Length: 350
Image 1 (cartoon, rainbow, N blue to C red):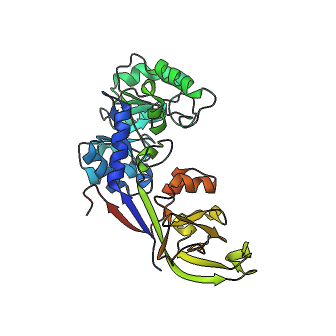
Image 2: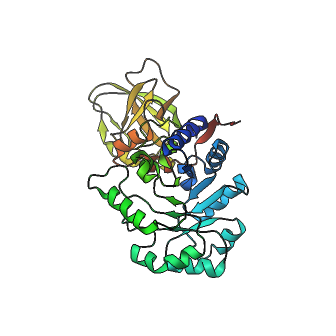
Image 3: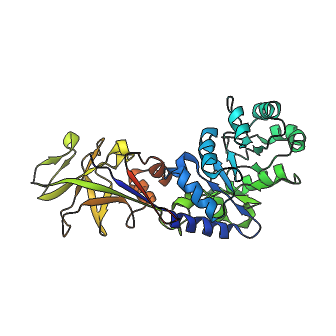
């Protein structure tokens, strides 16, 4: 079966990083989060492009992801691991010069015993209750940890994108209290935190979703286009159904296109009868169920039969698809499957 075409605009990626770097302000280092295979777009190409643009520090979720980035970038750029120093990661952290963001007393002990003198950072919990040392735990360990010379102290905002309760300000105050006078570079802001303003920037910012064109960075350049090839078109008469379960029945004569993609390619099944594909600026509503490998869409209003329909592109971004699916753009991007033919443009791409 023909695969869809996933095109990643590396120049747009660089423009987004540059814009967020500028928004971070002078004297602030702008890193880059490239976890989850560069948010589904290919971590190797993404990291190499951002390194050429000026990023010197990268964040990933796990040591295995860091290993792939180190292979691409070589020695030099700093690669920080959010999950910290997990059991079994010692050799990888040591051999590849990774910087684990230690999250607990257990991890701090493991790191200092297994890799004494090796770089590390510390993640602090300022209220999200997900990862990091809580204030009381940090107070008990602070002097010991600081004596070992951490590279970075960081925390994570829970409501940076939409704060209706004032929680950002409470986390900011907690982070300041926990880190004041430490003399160590600090990081609190991801994309949303950068947009909150200088109070949240500290010494290092670490944008993620904004690099890839997603909210809350509304001025982001679109990075991704996903075109799905049309396999067949047909006329459907009134009363005829389309797809599994006959969940859509024609009320009048329609022209329907079947495209080569489905939930095996990361196109969420909940887009059934509610998502939209596009062709030359014209919407083509999804008809019937999204199946494993195929989607059907209404192309009645098109002036000519299309060779392909776009799920992502100039007419519809990942956040638009997410709105229809009742989720977030992160899930749309990181769900993109591996059957697509991937093409990179710009950024010295061949």
